[in-house]
Length: 116
Image 1 (spheres, rainbow, N blue to C red):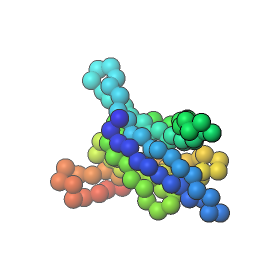
Image 2: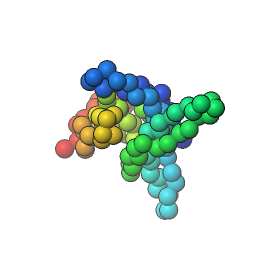
Image 3: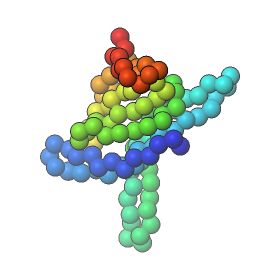
């Protein structure tokens, strides 16, 4: 696990959905790494026990190093030298990648370029 975010996702009708968002990295064969984002939904029962379930998993070709929210329904994901932005609909649990090719960051961390 490389990153963790507590996220209250707000729907247009005012309904709020709470998630824990986890960014991971996994070693693969031949010195390669992959990553994923997990959206976890937590719920406390009558006995004060917390239950966790995965509501969404998004795979990446590189480890996920950082996460941030943007607005009320968008999630920014940092993988390697790339940023991607996802918009979530909490009702149908769907996400749309607003930057399917991502943004790349140069080595000086001063220039952000939208990939074609």
